[in-house]
Length: 215
Image 1 (cartoon, rainbow, N blue to C red):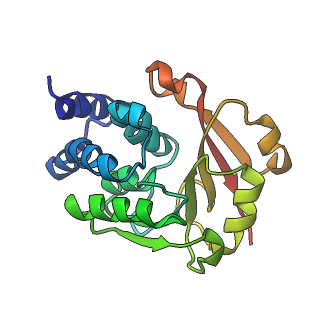
Image 2: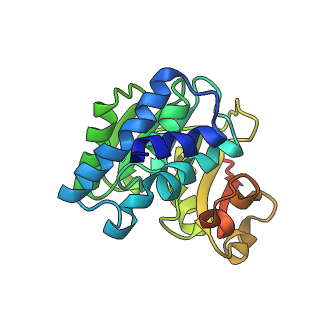
């Protein structure tokens, strides 16, 4: 079985209702990231073989706690090579994603990958999130910094009017112990264990953390 077949098996195991276009887009990620990673290291070299489990499926953990409605605007803060933004953009084609990172070569990889698979619902910024003035319903991020710092940076970017099942705010993928980080947001925070959704051992300690942000 080649890597893209293993891929689709893993993704479709949890997301069985993909369109043909979505299947093709997910399947293409393996070769694209392998090729780009050889030129520009955006994923640990020893981890590129686990791309679908550790990066693509992990990103889609956010989709287990919220299904973004059509017209939702999402910023991916510290996207690196495009996680969680690109997998989420494939899954939610009617949602717009803005991928932000301060490292230009990582933004280039994300941009090239998105272009290669024909994603039309993504934009990019090479810059610091502090500089981003755009307004969004949600900010998503994959463990780039402690929760209080993330909330401080992205509070200015959250619009107040919600139209999803969760009020607008920040949604993070985190690993390990998060109690201390969420303590300041006790009344606005929720957490989900990804082991309740994905059976692979990698997800045993992985969590989705949500903080409602009011402006």
